[in-house]
Length: 138
Image (cartoon, helix red, strand yellow):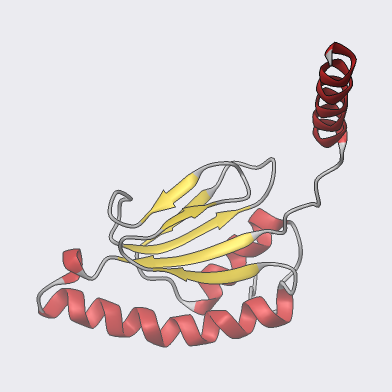
């Protein structure tokens, strides 16, 4: 009985050690669009939200074309997102109430505050992900 218990313990410890040394798949970069509807009440907030939605469609095309391995997501109020850099994003606690977050493994995330045009986003993403973008006319 003791030998069986010893064997089971040894197998469990060995399996756990192997999992720790198994390489994890590399996580791709993420661009997260966020807005907090609760804090965007009023005519100015609703106008900013409409402009945000307009530019989001254009930014989505830029991400698909120039950054194919970067995932573009929209984060809604009440959701918690684990970013590739190891941090978490919560729309209710981040300042400002709308913008973008760029994140990649082993890099500090970058917050793009407020409304961004497609060119602003493309230049910031090009700099952050270190690859060229046709939409960034520098």
